[in-house]
Length: 205
Ligand code: TYD
Image (cartoon, rainbow, N blue to C red; front, side, top):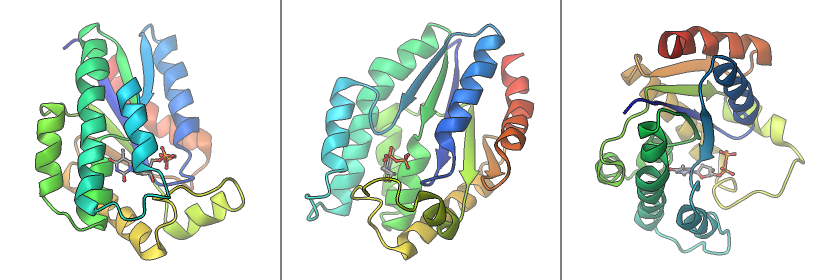
């Protein structure tokens, strides 16, 4: 595949959307075609699964059902959207990907290694070239989000869950230092962007 696959991970309020826009501008200015997408979502079917998995009225959903729904959404997204765009030589920037499942379902929900295995099937082993982790503690994330919007089902989880998420991401970054660039999300926007650019240069120039 000729393209470049970049994923962005981070909890609520970590500034993902801002950094995604800045990356898009940088990559476009360097002559590459960029597509932005997100998970869960990115295709009609994946967006329909998103509605289901984030529906806060479905409180009886089991952890494994949740993990499989995220993986199902991702299977459709990977095969019909991400891979064709990579084959076409585009830079695909995806807001969340497999690492979200490893951390939220595998580590925080406690489903463990089954999540990694399910996702290997779901993605046919497609791994990002670069993953940017915007690392923010749960306390700071809550501060940033105060009063912003109504919380979805996942966001309503308790603080302990979100602490496991932050710890899980750090663990992953430690495990895959070549692929995952961990950045302190409390740094100024421009500083974060500069750090991302340093890494991006190695991929796109
Ligand atoms: P979204 O509104 O896109 O959240 P954010 O702005 O924080 O990215 O909602 C996605 C939610 O789904 C978010 O709480 C994280 C969760 N999630 C998982 O638990 N597993 C996954 O595999 C993915 C992709 C997301």
